[in-house]
Length: 221
Ligand code: ATP
Image (tube, rainbow, N blue to C red; front, side, top):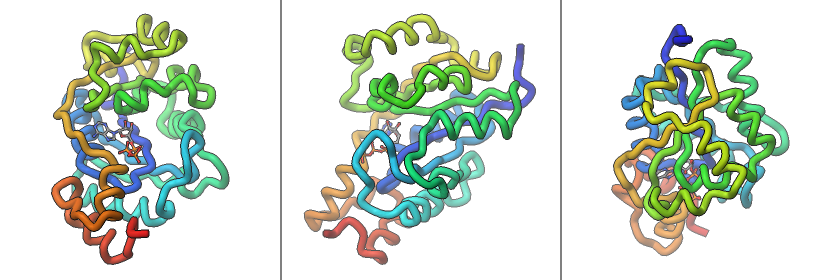
């Protein structure tokens, strides 16, 4: 089956704050997989980790500033409006109902996030709802990365990996694709640490986001 319209990409994250690592990931995967667009989905209260440093409203505002007028990108604020923990599987379930059964959805993940996948709520269901697209990330080299996969995830990886990335156009969900992207060793942690120590995180994230951080006095305490 060939899906009727181009696949939709979904990039979830805390975006605390958003940076060029996120933006290059979305841009390169959108181009290489010929996605219709990538939706940035900032988390509300993330279930897998400690609470973000700044509110969902600030993180959402920074994502909006960062994507600017890029026509390949949109913001989806549904998780920031949800009470309690937001699970990716619920977000993808809602999106699947909205776009219909045949349109391909691609869940974009960095290699670090993929290695954690088997700890996510109802993670097996993710493959019924979307393809999983794994992008290289510095610190997670793919040759040793495969040895670090827990067994249940390694089984899914072995049976679902598609060698041809554009195969995501041929089915609505269920595949795993690994994509090499520009290696940017940038993390939100690094940016928060920079601001806290009085160093400038300039050139690690868009100026518009940095201006917002400074205007609101974020990450200083
Ligand atoms: P933190 O340092 O606070 O843990 P982070 O920089 O990892 O944050 P997240 O919002 O947790 O950012 O990441 C959202 C998604 O983007 C995850 O799938 C993550 O793997 C991916 N990602 C983040 N930074 C990069 C990067 N530099 N290269 C590739 N993928 C990245």
